[in-house]
Length: 618
Image 1 (tube, rainbow, N blue to C red):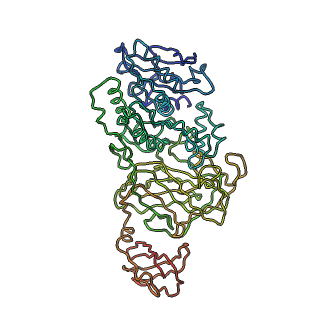
Image 2 (image 1 turned 90 degrees about the horizontal axis):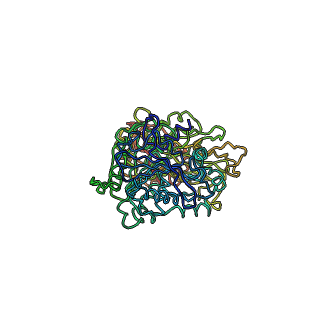
Image 3 (image 1 turned 30 degrees about the vertical axis):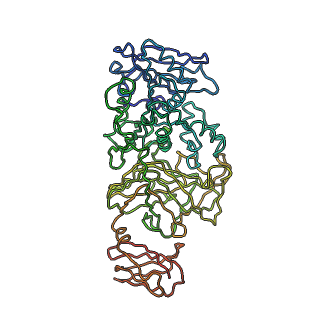
């Protein structure tokens, strides 16, 4: 099982056919006198050619089952020489272990060695996903003159606090998987649960767009856990890299997962429970065009390629841009309201659920990285039967709506325990009833004000607290007839650590507390999600509410009138408390002389069964 996982992690093909023999198996000398193990693959048509270098911590021998970019075992179909090297301290290079390796220097020394070989023409490009992508950035930083270009997939160089603690919550399952793969990161990560000087130093020293001296094709996936950081990093390379290559940075984002824990990977058609045939092998074809241009001097017009090629989820088509970002600066708010509604006006009332850490809400797909968890878009409908969460959804959309950017849930939360987590999942409700996950996020309430220890603040049961749960960047279109829906819970396990809700030391054993969590969604304490887009058109009731319904006079003294007939109404105060209600037939006026002075919310049901909410003043 583990061998299969590693193979899937590093390769972009779907079928393995046995083993092929490297042309050479060598030990490459490093500057400190140690050596790294490498396999060399030279097509029989090449005597002096360009090289694609892959540096891996997952055993170079796995590539004997086949090479990427469609080569598989047909080595002689390739126009490149391939060099696959085990990282220092891993597999064939285990004897070169040192306490703090500089993998960029090792990459530099490997390129230096390649450039001196008789079969090399001195041009070296690099390729690889995840850790194999991050090491390319380490190598770029060293600036070897023969490092001509790079294709890092689902990777960027920066390591920061939120690389492991998303929203202040440890991404437990991914850290466990990294430990299983030999990185041994848990002691350091768990010793630093707050954003401190150690994290800040690491973040600063691993952020170096100014050191990018070569063209890159950066490849990401909308269902990948690195997408947020990739979309921070790419604009920086467009504006801060060496001046000569600022217009030679490309970005490809497809409907892909990170890979490594199932059949889906970057460039495959199947992703979770969905399929994207028009995205299959796109990462390979673009990488080959890129390498052909920079390593083989092919006249293929590569530099006319749009700077950003990105997949429109929901519409399932490719889009193109020459900007530095595709983020939409316009926003639309949808407010949580009673009866599980997401509406365009301020909501009413509140909802509550009980969170038991001994029975946490389970992870179902998403941007995971662990063989025990599904990865990618999965139907969340099984969660609807659970009592430890609340759902809120729109009416069916009257037209398509696209959000491009980070979606944020701004919630008003009350809890009877000193700490809890708030987890939000964003889904597309299909007309056939599927609730397909788009992405998700989480926030630890004690760290709602910031992630430093000084920012830590525990909850008082009588207080209502605003908390922001930010979801990863996404480019998604909900089609007409579909619904926008969120799940709000206190867990997403085992992807993220389960909060014991006792206010004790984080990530230490202790007793669990059951928490009652209340989501307020009224005018005084609103809750909403903010979408990165505009022109959202909900179903019929929302169209009427926005365009045709008026209350007059407003302010009023003894009676208010409504511009359309209705058959029932409810009046709430701004805390969401019921003040007055009545069922009428074909009425257009409401007596309010018994109300105290103040602001109120009127909710009516029209004769066509539309529900409309309006604010008025007595």
